[in-house]
Image (cartoon, rainbow, N blue to C red; front, side, top):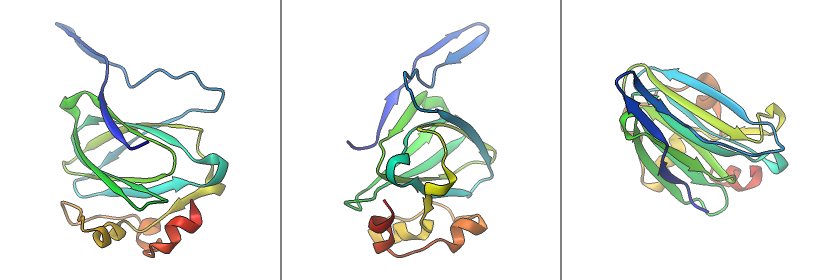
Length: 161
């Protein structure tokens, strides 16, 4: 399965609007979180290995992002520009490293992951690795210390999936 964008339920009236990220039936823990990012911030590329591999649902609440999904087995990359006014969600299957760059100040991204977060199985690769596939971040990337120190070796993707 490849990552894909789909429209979400959205209802608007004189009071404002109501948007639904999704509805899940799962025996696993569902981890829901949001991030607020400055323009240029890159979050990722992250994934969980083994039995803790996650399926992710990504929605932009405010702002705009450049989203990157990297298949850990085939090394295929899928990219998406997602804006809050699109009222859509990105579905990222398990087996992908995922990350995004905020393209506007105060970009808010909401994501749900199934199963939940497992620190022991979390893995990361340096976001600069996407340039090896002919793709560049639209803005100069602002990275966390953890992501800037992560591996830039393509071989580390397969060995950690």
